[in-house]
Amino acid sequence: MIELLSIPGLILIAGALILALVPANVRPGLFLLFPLFSLYYVMTQPDGYVITGSLNGIELILFEMDALSRVFGMIFSITAFTGGIYAWHMKELGQQTMALLYAGGALGVTFAGDLLTLIIFWELMAVSSTWLIWAQRTKESDGAGMRYLIYHILGGGLFLSGILLHYAETSSLAVETIPAIYSLPNILMLSGIAVNAAVVPLHTWLADSYPKATITGAVFMSAFTTKSAVYVLIRMFPGWDILIWFGAIMAIYGVMYAVICKDIREILAYHIISQVGFMVCGIGLGTEMALNGATAHAYSHILYKSLLFMSTGAILYAAGSSKMIHLGGLFKKMPWVFALYMIGALSISGLPLFNGYISKSMTISAAGYAHEEVAMLLLLLASVGTFLSVGLKLPYYTWFSRPAVSRTANENLTTETENQSTDLRPIPLNMYMAMGLTAAACLLYGLYPDALYRYLPYAVKYNPFTIYHFVEVMQISIMTLIIFWIFRKKMAPESILALDIDWFYRKLTPMLNTLFVHKVDRFFDVAEERVLGIASSLSSWFQDPLSSVLIKPAATDQSPPSSNRQSANYRLPIGWMMSFTLFFMALLLLYIL
Image (cartoon, rainbow, N blue to C red; front, top):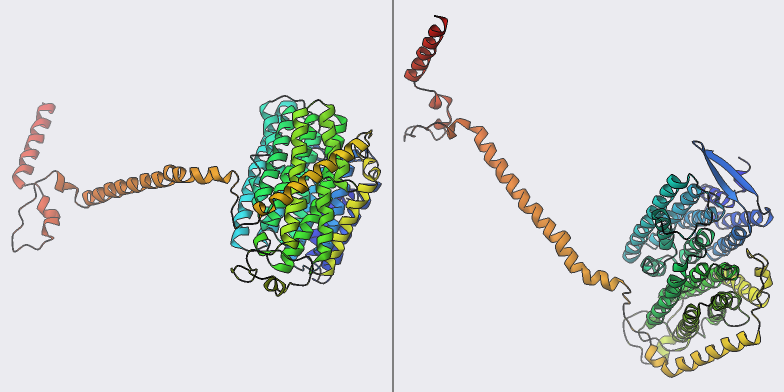
């Protein structure tokens, strides 16, 4: 039992249960203790440390420490801590407990040494994170949460089916590298993980749900679901070539829609898809440098993406809207939020001195060293789109340009004074503290990459600070800035809806609705009418069965209407009965004689 309490995932799950028993004013501070305990155990347990158990004779590895699990355990614990600081002002018990359960599920997946333990924590993440969407309590969040849950039930079902078939074939539940053989169990497991990784085209749950989650919930969601899937891919499917191209497509696809979108949190959601694409591509490459790059980029991404969601969450908290048509001119009122946001924006764009620079470049370079030039060029192109949308478009139209529509009324703003007169809600100090700590981490790792590189699963032989790489990144960034400035009016926010592959759903909906709803409904209506008709006929027949075989007597004017229903009316004539009796007796006598 004591050993179980040293498992980081169980520490956070126990913390969630304890939170439900303490007063509201104690919960925010107590929340922070459990991620710190988790981080302590992650940092102090030696490589190779294992905690085992058994279930019906099946050996389970509840906890297994190595270099890969340590680096993911570190960042998951750190993010749970900073997320707790960011949510300090929020006293809702449901969100607090579900956030800890969610983080505990991610840590449980990270240190699980067998597939049964892994799938249990995997499903715990799905259920607890759904609550962080529904907690927004709007019609939109209800629908997005249901879609999110359906997708993750599908993904979990595929994953579990693959695990069961894999166990039937191999009699092993070990979480280990799987050879690149496209058997049914492997395809099912890979497909289930791909749902959580938001691999295109299984990605729409992410872009739909993250912008509709609660302000604090979105910070946790940006860190755990997709990155725990990246961890499992690194652990089980490194070197699968198909992941190279799925990753490259994700990187480009996410950027394309980020450029189109006009909601600041939706832009960041699509960039999760794009940035996870870098990691998936690196996993597909399968070299030590590529796997280091995918791991480092997952670590960096969690930091700068949580910072970006914190910053945009602060805007939503203060202004009451995340639509760029309602924002603009916020620099004078929210300069510190702008500064902190830009640290995250320059990090995700991969500019020098920020943490994205030391991880993204490693993955791109790994593609070049593996002679996957097409994949390398696609990742570079995605980097251009990242800086264009997150580093330029979003901050320009949020902090500097005038809003197209008032935040308080759907009227066009014609003067700058109208924007200045709009009051903003004060941002709690704890939000600034969380953003400051996360921004400091982005700068720390960007300036001292060895602080991260020393924890990567393979020895690092990569120097990001070469002249060639520095010049390349700066040239791309400067050209992107010039292009944005020339075409900035073309990128002005509008009230539009980016349908993504939902376009296909909407086009198919009328046909599918007719085929599987209206036609089926009509079939059952006709069937119901026929069955009711038959039932009515049978009911009438059983009320008066002899009426169909005997001649009814003619009704007289004096007889009551119901007289033809009397049994006497259908009694055989006495002569018939006597004739039948005599005939039967004659046959009997003949037989006897």
